[in-house]
Image 1 (cartoon, rainbow, N blue to C red):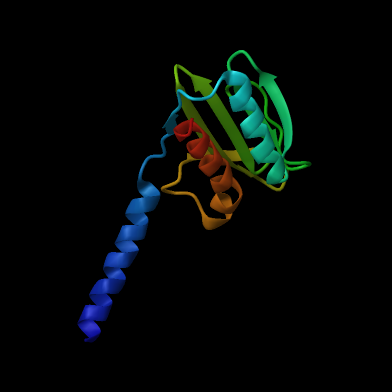
Image 2: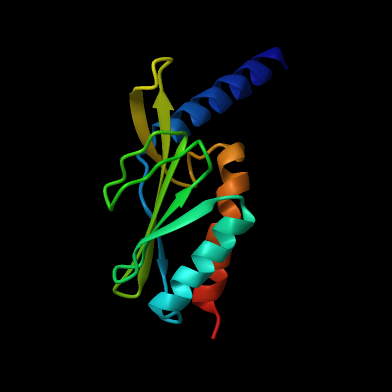
Length: 144
């Protein structure tokens, strides 16, 4: 019994490590049902529900950057971030591409690392805030 428990414990630990090592990838959602203005409206509405302050950077490309007060600053398509989160959503060629990044800063405020992640390696805290946005996007892209 003890050996089985130990084996399960080791397998669980190895499984968690493997999940963390898996390379992150952008989340892609096929979407032929929304116009770009509808897409931007949906995303900004959902982000506001989650407490984000919204800045629409480029309506032509459908790029939306989300800004949490005090915590986050994003610039352009290649997001430069000072804070815990960056989120880029691009709507092009009937596909929504979502990139999330977690930004780690040192005590001096300088960026230590920017980790891109997807749903496979996101923490439950991250998903609590960002999963509703993905769900709304998926539902809207499947309807009509």
